[in-house]
Image 1 (cartoon, rainbow, N blue to C red):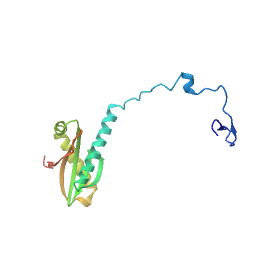
Image 2 (image 1 turned 60 degrees about the horizontal axis):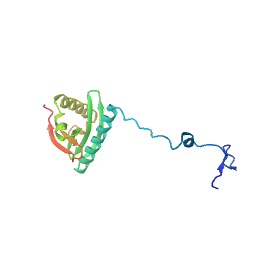
Image 3 (image 1 turned 30 degrees about the vertical axis):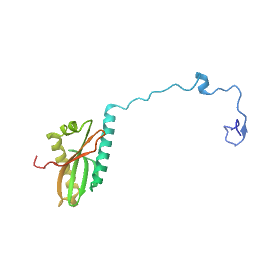
Image 4 (image 1 turned 120 degrees about the vertical axis):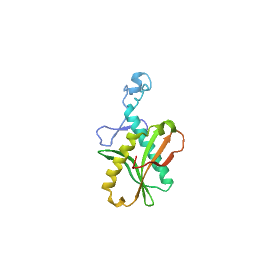
Length: 159
């Protein structure tokens, strides 16, 4: 069977290989040249890194006994990275992934906190079954090659 192939007509007949027909690699004088893959745009790379950081934070919180209710909840007033529940407490978690833990901690500022607070209010209005639960705002810092650092009560609704 080696050296024979099925005809192109699809009728199942075998025909011998054609003489004088070169493969594409032979025409170029060897294997195809190395084609360099292009890097994804910077914005896309940052978005992928954010997804990885949120996935790592979600796994870490699950190991600590939290149940993840929502990931990447988008509202007109902002986005919530993670919404988790533990007991009768609903936790809104802001995930920050940076090269170092210090730079991740520095990236949490007043505007960011206000955005999370507005988005949390929006989420609670649409999920009425959690109105009676306690609400808490946490931060999970993700640094390369380090364990995630979970900061409970990172900021309050009064901030």
